[in-house]
Image 1 (cartoon, rainbow, N blue to C red):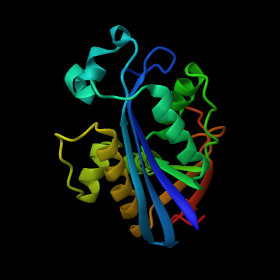
Image 2: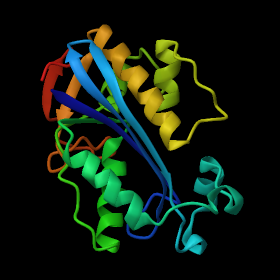
Image 3: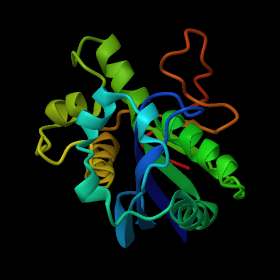
Image 4: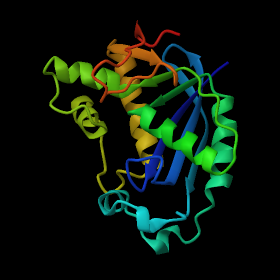
Length: 210
């Protein structure tokens, strides 16, 4: 059985050495065949920030952070312990600009003296999006841009909720598979960094074949 996990985080800024994860979510699927999957579980954790004064106000506005919503949030160590356990049982990760999320997960684990996840091979749908943008087929390689390109309903009121973004990423991934579009497979040590001019593109594979 191949286990696939979609992962997303929401953070208080862009710098994992200074900013924090305030929400982390993942959805697990079991792969039955090349285009058939069974849902295993959904997990979503709101995490209480420990130093909100260091947060970027724009990031907080984007994520919809407020003290009332987060008052029952869990501590980072508890949430990341569960996420690490899930990731360590995963054969394939999927996300949008996943390197960003993985760096924050690693930083959070290190700050809380937790074991760092053993990240498996991952697919970054932004790799496909950047290819579409380069060919002029879309004007944006963001998740919103991909949803627009594929005609996926995207409730903007729910955007930048980690769990909702995981659901959108999954819908985009299925469209990519069905459209026979290019898919790049990467690892944490050989990642896809869309902001690095000389990034390693990893192995180029069509149609999601492992």
